[in-house]
Length: 175
Image 1 (cartoon, one colour):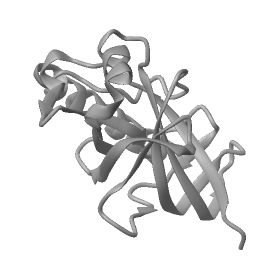
Image 2: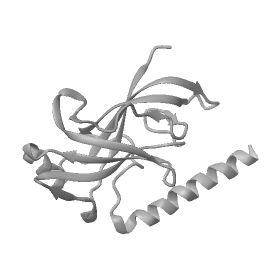
Image 3: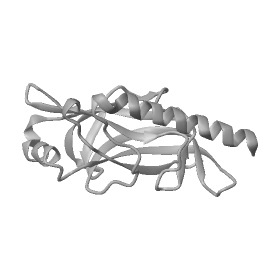
Image 4: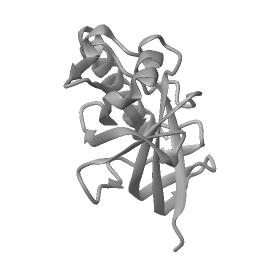
């Protein structure tokens, strides 16, 4: 089967405890994709389905291979049912760092190739397997539910995700 490239854009909201600077580089965490929820592309990641072929991936500007901003490490967080990226922007991109801190840019996008999928009863694509490509800084976010949450709000956010997952389980039991 031919692989299809997907770019899943998410909102980026920086909390004061989510930012750090190390040797001039700018670091923050972002939820880049939720599992088991229909994203704005009409796709559903069926759990932890993105395969990572290496530990570090490029952090790009608008998915352009010629505009490297830094690096990203992404893992699946089972408790949040989401992919979380630790993003480092290199200090040479000081204008972009300032723009992010000032809220000019507030969205990131994870790109992956998917090669296994099904279509559910609502005609939504359910991705069963994908291969990570990169994460990018973008100007407009598409996934309103995926965002950076300040450390003091993470527990509340985690509780909301768990409640949403439980509600889905209850709905499935009655369908």
